[in-house]
Length: 99
Image (cartoon, rainbow, N blue to C red; front, side):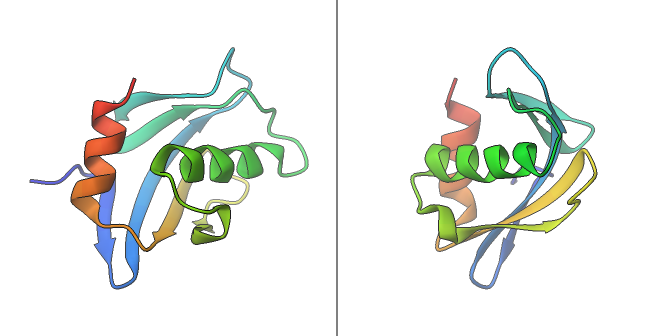
């Protein structure tokens, strides 16, 4: 049974994320209301939080930044990201098992 925030797609996975900007540090908090909650140190100004989110997900999953795309939620706290070239079980293991 996979996490509700994780969906396998043809070329990789999609993550449904709830972002909390201006946190003390960037980290995965856990699951909140069926979404993956991530605290970001970046402020929600001029796309800084979106850039920080993409960078954080790429680094966490060990993929190049170009493989992570913001699909929906550009100006919302609720976002959808697509990560190419990874599979759902691996992503869930990294995110759920990581501090």
